[in-house]
Image 1: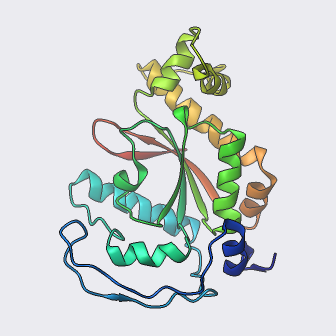
Image 2 (image 1 turned 90 degrees about the vertical axis):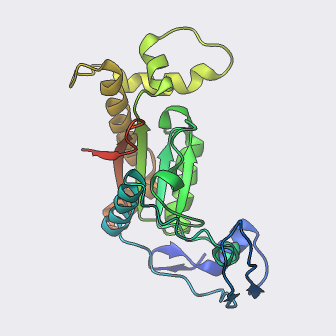
Image 3 (image 1 turned 180 degrees about the vertical axis):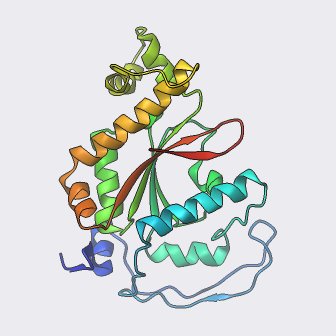
Length: 243
Protein backbone atom coordinates (compact mmCIF):
# COMPACT_ATOMS: atom_id res chain seq x y z
CA UNK A 1 0.00 0.00 0.00
CA UNK A 2 1.17 3.49 -0.81
CA UNK A 3 1.16 6.00 2.01
CA UNK A 4 0.74 9.75 2.27
CA UNK A 5 2.03 11.62 5.30
CA UNK A 6 2.53 8.31 7.07
CA UNK A 7 -1.05 7.12 6.49
CA UNK A 8 -2.62 4.75 3.97
CA UNK A 9 -3.90 6.59 0.88
CA UNK A 10 -7.60 6.95 0.26
CA UNK A 11 -7.63 4.75 -2.85
CA UNK A 12 -6.12 1.88 -0.89
CA UNK A 13 -8.48 2.57 1.99
CA UNK A 14 -11.49 2.18 -0.29
CA UNK A 15 -10.08 -1.09 -1.59
CA UNK A 16 -9.46 -2.25 1.97
CA UNK A 17 -12.97 -1.61 3.25
CA UNK A 18 -14.68 -2.59 -0.01
CA UNK A 19 -16.19 0.78 -0.90
CA UNK A 20 -16.78 1.15 -4.63
CA UNK A 21 -17.62 4.09 -6.87
CA UNK A 22 -15.59 7.16 -7.66
CA UNK A 23 -18.06 9.93 -6.86
CA UNK A 24 -21.30 10.95 -5.22
CA UNK A 25 -23.70 13.59 -6.48
CA UNK A 26 -26.92 13.95 -4.58
CA UNK A 27 -29.43 16.62 -3.71
CA UNK A 28 -30.27 16.95 -0.03
CA UNK A 29 -33.89 16.51 1.03
CA UNK A 30 -35.86 19.09 2.98
CA UNK A 31 -37.50 17.27 5.87
CA UNK A 32 -38.32 17.84 9.50
CA UNK A 33 -36.04 15.01 10.62
CA UNK A 34 -32.94 16.46 8.98
CA UNK A 35 -33.78 20.16 9.17
CA UNK A 36 -34.69 22.47 6.33
CA UNK A 37 -31.87 22.67 3.82
CA UNK A 38 -31.34 22.57 0.09
CA UNK A 39 -27.88 21.79 -1.20
CA UNK A 40 -26.16 19.58 -3.72
CA UNK A 41 -23.25 17.40 -2.63
CA UNK A 42 -20.26 17.90 -4.89
CA UNK A 43 -18.71 14.79 -6.43
CA UNK A 44 -16.29 13.20 -3.99
CA UNK A 45 -12.78 12.99 -5.42
CA UNK A 46 -11.10 9.74 -4.53
CA UNK A 47 -7.72 11.30 -3.75
CA UNK A 48 -9.05 14.30 -1.80
CA UNK A 49 -7.94 13.40 1.71
CA UNK A 50 -8.00 16.11 4.38
CA UNK A 51 -4.96 16.71 6.52
CA UNK A 52 -5.31 14.93 9.88
CA UNK A 53 -6.17 17.13 12.84
CA UNK A 54 -3.18 17.38 15.21
CA UNK A 55 -3.49 15.61 18.59
CA UNK A 56 -3.68 18.88 20.54
CA UNK A 57 -6.23 20.45 18.22
CA UNK A 58 -8.32 17.28 18.24
CA UNK A 59 -8.34 17.27 22.04
CA UNK A 60 -9.24 20.97 22.13
CA UNK A 61 -12.11 20.35 19.74
CA UNK A 62 -13.48 17.53 21.88
CA UNK A 63 -13.25 19.46 25.14
CA UNK A 64 -14.95 22.48 23.58
CA UNK A 65 -17.74 20.20 22.40
CA UNK A 66 -18.09 18.76 25.88
CA UNK A 67 -18.40 22.27 27.30
CA UNK A 68 -21.24 22.99 24.87
CA UNK A 69 -22.94 19.76 25.92
CA UNK A 70 -22.65 20.62 29.62
CA UNK A 71 -23.99 24.14 29.11
CA UNK A 72 -26.88 22.96 26.91
CA UNK A 73 -25.49 24.91 23.96
CA UNK A 74 -24.98 22.01 21.60
CA UNK A 75 -24.38 22.83 17.95
CA UNK A 76 -25.06 19.25 16.76
CA UNK A 77 -22.54 19.67 13.90
CA UNK A 78 -22.28 17.40 10.87
CA UNK A 79 -25.68 15.79 11.31
CA UNK A 80 -27.39 16.95 8.10
CA UNK A 81 -28.45 14.94 5.06
CA UNK A 82 -25.61 16.57 3.14
CA UNK A 83 -23.08 15.36 5.73
CA UNK A 84 -24.54 11.86 5.46
CA UNK A 85 -23.85 11.91 1.74
CA UNK A 86 -20.36 13.34 2.17
CA UNK A 87 -19.16 10.63 4.56
CA UNK A 88 -20.78 7.84 2.56
CA UNK A 89 -17.73 7.94 0.27
CA UNK A 90 -15.08 7.64 2.99
CA UNK A 91 -14.41 8.47 6.63
CA UNK A 92 -11.69 10.57 8.22
CA UNK A 93 -12.51 10.80 11.95
CA UNK A 94 -10.43 13.45 13.71
CA UNK A 95 -10.36 11.52 17.01
CA UNK A 96 -10.89 8.03 18.37
CA UNK A 97 -12.60 7.01 21.60
CA UNK A 98 -12.15 3.82 23.58
CA UNK A 99 -15.13 4.11 25.89
CA UNK A 100 -17.31 2.03 28.14
CA UNK A 101 -20.40 0.44 26.60
CA UNK A 102 -22.56 2.13 29.24
CA UNK A 103 -25.69 3.53 27.57
CA UNK A 104 -25.31 6.82 29.44
CA UNK A 105 -22.02 7.75 27.76
CA UNK A 106 -22.59 8.14 23.99
CA UNK A 107 -19.42 9.81 22.72
CA UNK A 108 -20.90 11.78 19.81
CA UNK A 109 -23.46 13.38 22.13
CA UNK A 110 -21.27 14.20 25.14
CA UNK A 111 -18.59 15.68 22.84
CA UNK A 112 -21.17 17.37 20.56
CA UNK A 113 -19.88 15.85 17.33
CA UNK A 114 -21.50 14.37 14.24
CA UNK A 115 -21.32 11.85 11.44
CA UNK A 116 -17.76 10.85 10.55
CA UNK A 117 -16.14 12.89 13.33
CA UNK A 118 -15.31 10.15 15.83
CA UNK A 119 -14.14 6.56 15.55
CA UNK A 120 -15.70 4.96 18.62
CA UNK A 121 -14.87 1.60 20.20
CA UNK A 122 -17.06 0.71 23.17
CA UNK A 123 -16.51 -2.17 25.57
CA UNK A 124 -17.71 -2.65 29.13
CA UNK A 125 -15.05 -1.18 31.41
CA UNK A 126 -13.30 0.54 28.44
CA UNK A 127 -10.81 -2.33 28.40
CA UNK A 128 -8.00 -2.86 25.91
CA UNK A 129 -8.77 -6.14 24.15
CA UNK A 130 -7.06 -7.45 20.99
CA UNK A 131 -10.13 -6.47 18.96
CA UNK A 132 -10.21 -2.99 20.46
CA UNK A 133 -6.50 -2.52 19.79
CA UNK A 134 -6.85 -3.64 16.19
CA UNK A 135 -9.78 -1.30 15.67
CA UNK A 136 -7.79 1.65 17.00
CA UNK A 137 -4.78 0.70 14.87
CA UNK A 138 -7.10 0.91 11.87
CA UNK A 139 -8.48 4.28 13.00
CA UNK A 140 -5.02 5.79 13.38
CA UNK A 141 -2.79 4.19 10.75
CA UNK A 142 -5.42 3.90 8.01
CA UNK A 143 -8.00 6.62 8.69
CA UNK A 144 -5.54 9.16 10.09
CA UNK A 145 -6.97 9.86 13.54
CA UNK A 146 -4.21 11.40 15.69
CA UNK A 147 -5.90 11.26 19.09
CA UNK A 148 -7.22 8.40 21.21
CA UNK A 149 -9.12 9.04 24.44
CA UNK A 150 -9.65 6.14 26.83
CA UNK A 151 -12.86 7.32 28.47
CA UNK A 152 -13.97 5.86 31.79
CA UNK A 153 -16.93 7.12 33.75
CA UNK A 154 -18.31 7.70 37.21
CA UNK A 155 -19.86 4.70 39.01
CA UNK A 156 -18.79 2.23 36.31
CA UNK A 157 -20.55 -1.09 36.91
CA UNK A 158 -17.73 -3.09 35.33
CA UNK A 159 -15.19 -1.53 37.68
CA UNK A 160 -17.46 -2.15 40.66
CA UNK A 161 -17.72 -5.80 39.66
CA UNK A 162 -13.92 -6.05 39.50
CA UNK A 163 -13.66 -4.59 42.99
CA UNK A 164 -16.09 -7.17 44.38
CA UNK A 165 -14.42 -10.17 42.71
CA UNK A 166 -17.69 -12.13 42.71
CA UNK A 167 -18.23 -15.08 40.40
CA UNK A 168 -20.10 -13.88 37.32
CA UNK A 169 -22.20 -15.89 34.84
CA UNK A 170 -21.46 -16.45 31.19
CA UNK A 171 -18.79 -14.28 29.60
CA UNK A 172 -19.33 -11.30 31.89
CA UNK A 173 -16.22 -12.18 33.83
CA UNK A 174 -13.96 -11.72 30.80
CA UNK A 175 -13.92 -7.93 30.88
CA UNK A 176 -13.85 -7.95 34.69
CA UNK A 177 -10.59 -9.91 34.54
CA UNK A 178 -9.20 -7.27 32.17
CA UNK A 179 -9.85 -4.62 34.82
CA UNK A 180 -8.46 -6.43 37.86
CA UNK A 181 -4.75 -5.81 37.07
CA UNK A 182 -5.47 -2.08 37.20
CA UNK A 183 -6.60 -2.42 40.81
CA UNK A 184 -3.46 -4.10 42.13
CA UNK A 185 -1.80 -1.83 44.64
CA UNK A 186 -4.29 0.95 44.02
CA UNK A 187 -3.77 3.95 46.27
CA UNK A 188 -6.77 5.80 47.63
CA UNK A 189 -6.99 9.33 46.26
CA UNK A 190 -10.42 10.18 47.63
CA UNK A 191 -13.10 8.85 49.93
CA UNK A 192 -14.71 7.10 46.97
CA UNK A 193 -13.17 3.67 46.34
CA UNK A 194 -15.08 3.16 43.10
CA UNK A 195 -13.97 6.51 41.70
CA UNK A 196 -10.35 5.74 42.61
CA UNK A 197 -10.71 2.41 40.82
CA UNK A 198 -12.24 4.05 37.74
CA UNK A 199 -9.30 6.45 37.49
CA UNK A 200 -6.78 3.65 38.07
CA UNK A 201 -8.42 1.56 35.36
CA UNK A 202 -8.25 4.39 32.82
CA UNK A 203 -4.57 4.93 33.55
CA UNK A 204 -3.88 1.20 33.27
CA UNK A 205 -5.73 0.85 29.96
CA UNK A 206 -3.93 3.91 28.51
CA UNK A 207 -0.57 2.37 29.43
CA UNK A 208 -1.58 -1.02 28.07
CA UNK A 209 -2.70 0.49 24.78
CA UNK A 210 0.57 2.37 24.42
CA UNK A 211 2.64 -0.73 25.15
CA UNK A 212 0.68 -3.46 23.37
CA UNK A 213 0.72 -2.11 19.83
CA UNK A 214 3.85 -1.52 17.78
CA UNK A 215 1.76 0.49 15.30
CA UNK A 216 0.48 2.89 17.94
CA UNK A 217 3.92 3.11 19.58
CA UNK A 218 5.51 4.12 16.27
CA UNK A 219 2.87 6.76 15.58
CA UNK A 220 3.44 8.22 19.05
CA UNK A 221 7.20 8.37 18.40
CA UNK A 222 6.57 10.17 15.10
CA UNK A 223 4.36 12.74 16.84
CA UNK A 224 1.31 11.59 14.86
CA UNK A 225 -0.63 10.22 17.81
CA UNK A 226 -1.44 11.05 21.40
CA UNK A 227 -3.27 8.73 23.80
CA UNK A 228 -4.90 10.31 26.83
CA UNK A 229 -7.29 9.25 29.56
CA UNK A 230 -10.52 10.86 30.64
CA UNK A 231 -13.33 10.45 33.16
CA UNK A 232 -16.96 11.25 32.38
CA UNK A 233 -19.16 12.52 35.21
CA UNK A 234 -22.65 11.02 34.97
CA UNK A 235 -24.13 13.77 37.11
CA UNK A 236 -22.73 16.83 35.35
CA UNK A 237 -21.76 15.58 31.89
CA UNK A 238 -18.21 16.86 32.32
CA UNK A 239 -15.18 15.08 30.88
CA UNK A 240 -12.04 15.51 33.00
CA UNK A 241 -8.63 14.52 31.69
CA UNK A 242 -6.65 12.03 33.78
CA UNK A 243 -2.94 12.71 34.01
